[in-house]
Amino acid sequence: MTSTDGSPDGIPADGTRASAADGVRFAFGTLTVLPVRVTRWDRPAARAGMRAAPLAGLVVGLAAAALGALLLAAGAGPPLAAVASVAVTAALTRGLHLDGLADTADGLGSGKPAEDALRIMKRSDIGPFGVVTLLLVLLAQVAAVSELYGAGWAHGAVALAVSGVAARLALTLACRTGVPPARPDGLGAAVAGSVPPRAALLTALAAGAVCAAGGGAFGVTGAVHHVLAVLAALGAAHLLLRHCVRRFGGVTGDVLGALAETAATAALVALALG
Image (cartoon, rainbow, N blue to C red; front, side, top):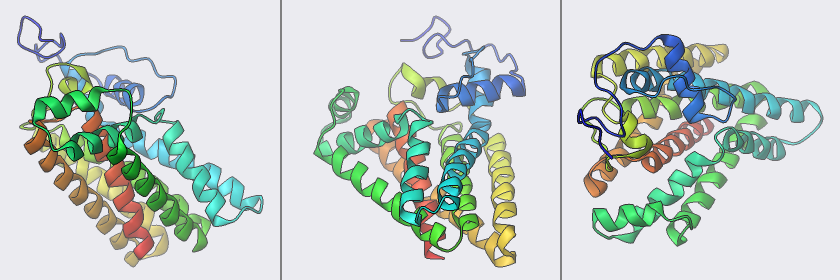
């Protein structure tokens, strides 16, 4: 659906600036299940919201780390704590990112033209490509977090926070100017192309600094390692984004969810390998 001014889904293109608070509400209201009321649903708010997305990821990661730390303190082993932490990240997003990952896998795996693939992605059921992808990604996340918790609860906690930031930073970069929506409606159309390149770069630098500071708890090597993990996450997400734009003609809400899960998994695996 397109409004009379040519903007997607009725979003005005008047350039009205959105406050930082508007952006934070948009980010938390659309990317988490936390009880945050989105007071503005327009293009400027979408721009500010996607810039604030890494903050939402940080909160999700810290919540996951908190439960994992509690279980470890109660005597649970790293595998159980890892399963609980991964479950928290899924619960705080209502599983929407995982659902987007499965739908995107089904669309890509179908091998059909863009229009047919997008139709497959909108169906409520999950096909074999989606099931296998979900299984492998969740296993990789749990295995990586378990490995990190085994090295010490702090390693797992920082890794979860960093992966949360990296996952949502991938969304910020995927919503930069020049990346088109695959459909004229939906969340993808609302946020696609909303973030100017300079704003995306500044957000990436700020998020990278936060991740470096977290890794700095383990020394200079730790800081470098965590920054490299973020770069690996963004690289994996960028490859998937390019493929999706080529196959579907742009991004959708499902594609954004797939990018977030891909980046989170890549970051966790990169940190576990260290």
